[in-house]
Image (cartoon, rainbow, N blue to C red):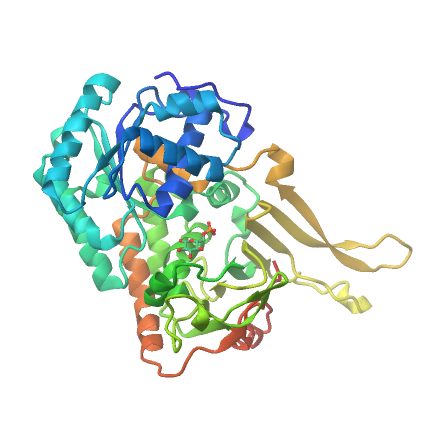
Length: 509
Ligand code: BG6
């Protein structure tokens, strides 16, 4: 299949262009007028076209309640790309060719007539654009619509069963995958009543991040790390997902979620799984996911956890309101905007090694960082000279300023033996001279290619919930408000106590 445009000189894309262009399909976006479509999906698809990774004939159909013509939809998506595309300004020639594959159908998700109209249009595209019955349904809608959409797609015969052959049908669903274990099971049940598990692509956008994928390459493409990657050499591991923003306009959603559901149950546990998993037998969807699930099964029930909620403060020089003052937030809310958990994995490799995880809103800066803290040197040769040695730290910066650094002690130049910590640095920007692609670009492409390696499987989701549920119950039943922390600080003092009583300290990323 020939790409739609030529690939520009992005070294991170090299090698993709010939092998990885999918067959054209109809990608139907339910919730086409929503934020996700405008900020991530259409700009991501445009970037794929820009990089020559979309096939000729790829067709994108938005569906939402609002009345709009194809032309109006194209104009509003162009405005979205002008604002959100990774490389701007938008290239007019590429846009023209991309926009010829953009269409719009108006209708309610609950109205069977909308599906009849949609189906007729998709069949027309099969004839005119070569999409040959291939379908991807992207449910960019709140989960309460999943059931109805799945049911109506099924009723209208818009889903092909892969067991019976024929063109593929895939469905992409967005988090939240449930609110707890019981609701996640229900959602999964809804999905498998219409689709088979291998047709379901559950997006956790962290898995689309270059640096998150690089965790697998770092660990399993290099011979030097694996021998040290275990309890004998590693003292502890820290994971930080910090955001400087508050809940912005999502007060309604956040009041029902809290940071543990929003970040820890999904993104954070994905990071933990990739750091802790055993080498998979193949780089293939089920082999990788089998190993990740084993990590989740090894999670010990949570014993130590701290939560917090931001109070008024100042972030990057600007006043930040308290969480309780945000729009659509209960003025007496007990929802946590910060959580820190001490995690243990009861398995051979990690027995006794604490993984400290923390996530929070309104922290001093946006940073996602993993640090592997090694045990000190076994023989204190230089300590005898009164020198304080620092343990080695391998820090993986997921974002921003993506890269990896290794800290070790070095001799300071001069006639006396004095030491100082130094770092060896790898930075994406310097080594590759290019911005990594956006997570959604990669994930949309993988769905078109039918590779589910970077998507969450049903058992991953359910195992993660069964670990987190008891803590959520404990917090929900605690009448006391969470400890407050000033916006723009690194969370409540209790979080420092959690790690410092073990003789360790949070790393400042
Ligand atoms: C989303 C959460 O899944 O991830 C948001 O719902 C959060 O609350 C976002 O802000 C963080 O994503 P990223 O890519 O900016 O780290």
